[in-house]
Structure formats: structure tokens, C-alpha cells
Length: 145
Image (cartoon, rainbow, N blue to C red; front, top):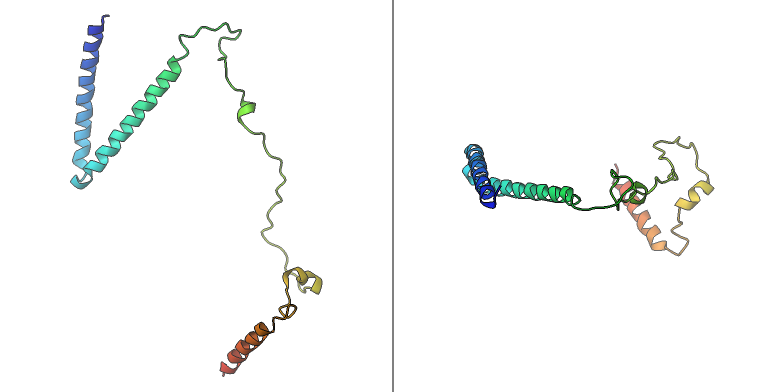
């Protein structure tokens, strides 16, 4: 097959493909409102471009090893592959404690139980807070009939 025959076949195939795509696009555009046609056309062209790039990349990756000659003992194993153990980290041990969704409520708390959670406001001379809190409580109690 000569180069001119190949070019003629490509041109014919491209013409047929273009005609089919135009028919499909026309049918789809009839269903799309006129104000959204530009968006649909842009998105579809972008999708076709990404698809064509993916096909080209796949064909280049697949056909790239055909011309290489290598003296390999196992012809099914490609040279230069990375073992799966090097790609993936091993599983982590279960050191995370479980989650306690519920616990029994205590009937009483001791002072030792509450000590980590309680800070005495009067310890550092914070008397103004005490006065303010007492005033607020007095106002609330006096407003109740």
C-alpha cells in the first residue's frame, strides 16, 4: 500500500466519521434549548479531545515496547517493573482504641473525679467574676414572680 492510497483511505474514513458525528450532533442539538447549546458543544468537544488523548496515550504505551529487543528469561514479565511490595505501604497495626459510644452514668462524683475538670475561680483572686455572677443570679431570681 502506498502513501497516497493510505491518505485516500484516511480521507474517506474521516469523511464518513464526520458525517455520522454531524448527524448525531444535530439530533442532540435539537433537544437542547438554544441558550445552552454553546455550553453543550464546548463540553462535548472537550470530552472528545480528552478521549482522543487517552486513546493516543494508551496506544503509545501499548505499542512502545514492540520494537525493543531484550534477552529475558521470562518473556511474559516486562523488564523494569516495580514489585507491588515497593508500591504499597504495609497495613498498619490496630493501635487505635475503639470508640465508646455510651457509658454508664455515675450516680455520684467525688472531688477527685471532678478535680481535672474544675478550676476554682477564686484561686487567683478572680473576685470580680464572683460578684458579677452573683448579681446575675440575683437579678434572675428577683425577676421570677
